[in-house]
Image (cartoon, rainbow, N blue to C red; front, side, top):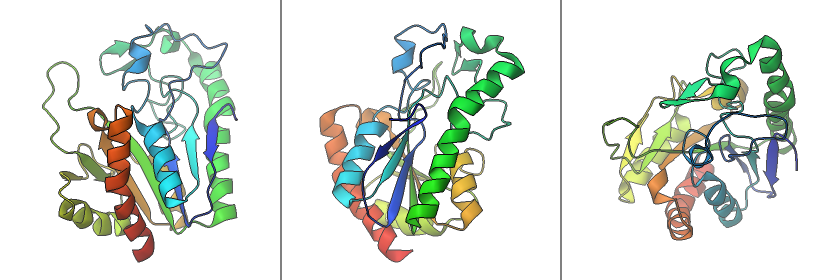
Length: 238
């Protein structure tokens, strides 16, 4: 197991990537955040790790899961992004990041972000996947009275919408309430897929699942059954 990622074994023609699959805070890093907050979406994409493992097992594809909390460093941000090492997140202060400075930020880049993305690039070179599957989860609403998010699954994309245009009608036909670049736009939040998908001309399917649907084993199993046929159809079509 790497400091920055965990591999899921598989030999299929797609590669699953879960940037925010962990709430892990490595030894030597003190965020100053209450333990309860570390179980919230600000620290981890709830449900992504078990759903990723289930989908990889069902479809037979390999996967890469981020192995560090997004509060330590956000693996789905550009290296120079302001939110790469967040000082606040959805109303929560992150005291351990407040005075980190350039040296501390650079150390986290070197320990986690750079090796993670180097590994993703290496896997793409070795496996030559025909599709990347980016898996995230989102909250039913933001804190502080945010509007409810009715979508069960969102499909995110930036410039390359090839896989999205295949997947969205399939999801809708399966009776899934589907967001087309909702609950937020892949034109804004798409760093990993911009880098490894669009940067290499590889089609990618960015899936966001509402976290209350995959917060337990039963939900993970149910949504694996619903999403796996769609992913397999996209793999066959791209």
